[in-house]
Amino acid sequence: QVQLVQSVSELKKPGASVKVSCKASGYTFISYAINWVRQAPGQGLEWMGWIEPNTGNPRYAPAFTGRYVLSLDTSVSTAFLQINDLRTDDTAVYYCARVGVGTRLGIDLWGQGTLITVSS
Amino acid sequence: DIQVTQSPSSLSASVGDRVTITCRASQTISNFLSWYQQRPGKPPNLLIYAVSTLQNGVPSRFSGAGSGTEFTLTISGVQPDDFATYFCQQTYTVPRTFGQGTKLEI
Image 1 (cartoon, rainbow over the protein chains, first blue to last red):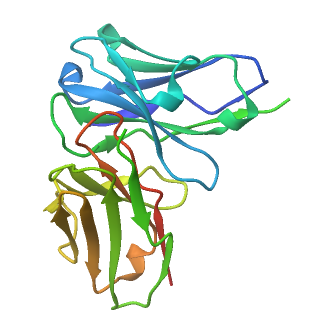
Image 2 (image 1 turned 180 degrees about the horizontal axis):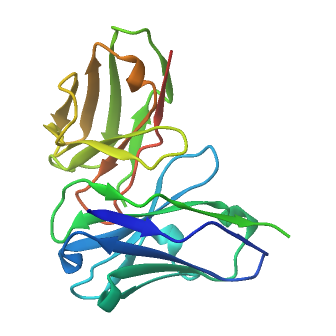
């Protein structure tokens, strides 16, 4: 079954770090870039960045540089989003999603989302 | 970065209506625009890519049009299942920005 399965929701304190995982199955992992998309409560979608499994190179949207780190473990077909120095306004659902490497097509597969709540 | 402005932010309709949502890009994006539907508590679902190509399984009452900087999503004969939020996304360049979303309400 073609799917992306994300790690479970987490509650974190301000200043802490969190690492969200996204495990791919059912397709050739290196053929698709993994995007990360943030959705704050009641808000729209924000494209955070992506990482291409064939190169391991991440690209970040300007608003998501510095505290955000995208990485991969191709041996287990898993992508990761790490957020450092968490702030309360990082509270959101984070989605991983795939798009074909080198294509300009839409995102055709999404993970179920991981809710990160940042609160003291 | 390319900005994508989506309108309206909300839209009221009745079953059977024809509705249109618009996205405008701050610069030309050729035909690299996708549309998504999102229901509460669920991830988005790809409806249309490359402006007008329906993703497999998407009903034909959904259609997309446009080029350059102005694009539309039309639902011809809204069904109860269509009441959701819709987003566009430019896939021309990085960062691949989304529109702000349109909530389609009864």
